[in-house]
Image 1 (spheres, rainbow, N blue to C red):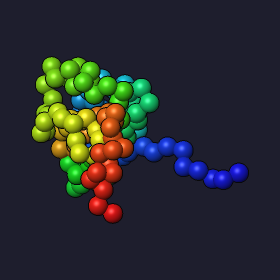
Image 2: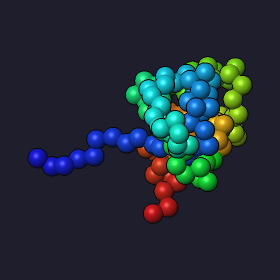
Image 3: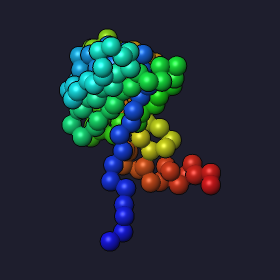
Image 4: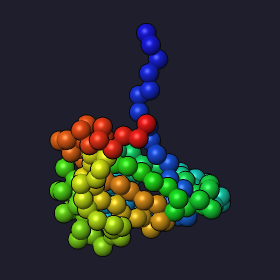
Length: 134
């Protein structure tokens, strides 16, 4: 049997796990899976989930907070965009069809980390071939 990669989970660097999981729960519709850490230790770790997407957060590298990027594939980006529009979150750029074959939008979390939320376009394969550089 061939070994295979099974999945991935992003770990975003944050300043405050508590504030971040709260934002993901209240503004982005995620469920808090857990928060870990020693109360006497400033470093904490947290995890949220929405459907099959899991995002983890760590305070261990606070100096990198705001540099994380997470691409989230959804069934219908139009519906998610409509849902999130009224939640007072920071959108970055436009909601559009992209040359790489996705329709997506971007939001920035309370740490500055970027979430790109989108779905594949029907002509994604054609667009990828058209814009391929290597």
